[in-house]
Structures are given as structure tokens and as C-alpha cells.
Image (cartoon, rainbow, N blue to C red; front, side, top):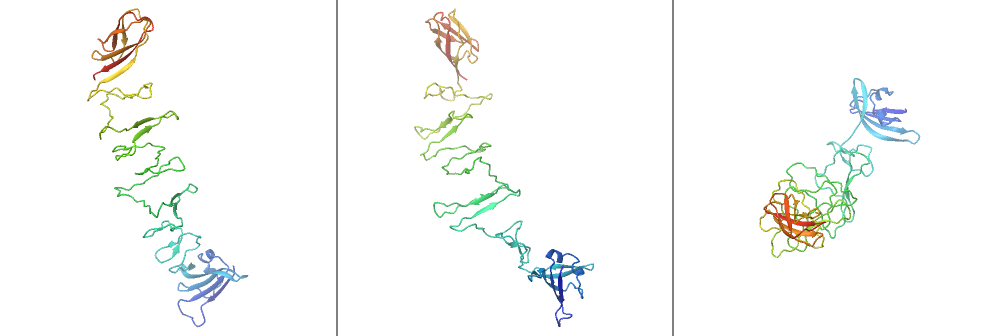
Length: 354
């Protein structure tokens, strides 16, 4: 430690504030430590009304040091130097390209504020110069979010704004599972993809197509196995401006409705007119070895009030069915014109009124 002192100026004895000049090789953290001034070989004890002009971290070989202005504080006889900060001073050190913000209300400037506030808008970039807003999370090396503009087809401004919310809300951007994705927007011609969680409309309907025409609306569902086709529900033009509604009756149990394979490229459902709740069942009977002109089959859906249609699918003898009836629920009785013989099999359609 090398220090040089000069207390007061000629002709200013008793003038306050008194100025003390110090040149020392000690660093800033050393000279501002409590008691440092007490340990210096001063002929006159400094007081809290004194002002200290100091070159600290002084290198005698180069004649270079750092200037600072200090005030003297005293507590129980222990003197401490406090670096004087005037309005407009900067809290050092600073980092290149960092924002400067006010530190307190005296005009002092610093960097790395917890929150920086501007009463108006904040602009990133200029026309012809790209700008963006980057936000980093509290955990290091876990990425960032960037809001950045790309060139439009014309000089158009794109504004993101909220409608009037009725509560505090956190809007979360889900992980799309891909390096490029889009939000679901109205009037968008792009394909919207949801890779998790499903998509539910709690109130309202899903509408596809355009009421003004020009685009066929539809719903396309793919099975879990790839390259196994799809199920498509598509709208075709009606004769008039009428709606076709597919809905369920009041079910008495959980049911899975399966569309059977018609075996051809084009087919149609069998429908009951009006508000009928008629039910249609179809199937095949097990093989029968014959030996009689009458046989009974177990068909759970058949009832005495059923409409019954049977077709002789196969038999050994060239006979045909003459009657099919049900007197006991669940039992189908079929009469043949003769003994049909071995390998007799029937197909049937059962129509119940409700």
C-alpha cells in the first residue's frame, strides 16, 4: 500500500467543507472498508463534513489511477469512505449492448433491472431492419421464446391483441410435436394439426365447408393402423336447401353401431320412414343336416311380431322354404317344401317394429 495525502488548501483553514486529496495504490473495495481511513498516517483527523478527492488503484510506474469523490462517515470513531454518487451517475460496471435504466429516483443509471418499463410502445427493428423480442426462462440452457416479424406481401401491420377477458388468464402454447406448426385461426386455408389432448368444442358445433358454396365440408377419421383407409362423412348437394341430420334415438344401453361391408363399391342403408323405431337384424343360420321338412333355429332377435325374410343359402336337395314364423321369442321356425338334406344353411332378415 502506497498512499499520499494532502489535507486542505492554503488559505482555507477552517473552511467547510474541507477537501482532502489522497493518492493510493489500494483498490476501491479496500479504501471503502470501515476503518481504512483511521489507519492512514494523517496529521489531521477527517470529519463527516470533509470531501475526499482520491486516485485509487494508482500505479506509480504509469502514473495512472481511477478518480473518485468520497464522503466521510463516522460511527463510534470508525471512519468510512463512501463514494459520492451524483444525479446522472452510472452504477459500474456495465456490459456492452445492455439496456440502461434508472436506479432509484435521483437520475442514477444502471443495467440488469428486474423490470424495465416504458410508458409507451417498445419497437424492435425498423422498416428494412429485422427486430425481435426474446424472452428467456429462469433456468439456464432451456431455450427461449422469440416473437419476430417476417416480410408480408405488402406494407401491412399485424396486430396481436386480446378481447376483453373476464378473469386473469395464462395462455399456454402447447407442444405441437414438430419443428413447424400453426395456430388454429378463422379463415385459414392451411391444415391445422393437434398432436395431443384432443380437440373439444364444449358449446356449439363443428362446421366444415362454406354456406356460400364452393367447398365440400366433411369429417375424415383415420384408424390407429397406418395405411388402412379412413372413414369419411361428406355432404353432397340436396335437391333443395334442406338439412340432413343424423342423430340417435334414446338408447337403453351403451352401443357400438358398426357399418357392415356391403361387398361392393356403392351401397345404401335400409331406412324406415317417419319417426319409426324399427330395428333390422340379419344373419345366417348354422348348417343343418336335414332329415325333415321343418327345423327351428335360435335367433335372439326374432319375436312373434317380427317381419321375417329368409333365403335358402345352400342345401343338398333342390327344395325351397315355404314358411318362416316365430311363435316363441328367440326361436325361428322354418318349413321347407321337402327335406333339404345335408349342409342346409339359411340367411335371414328380421325387422322388429320397435
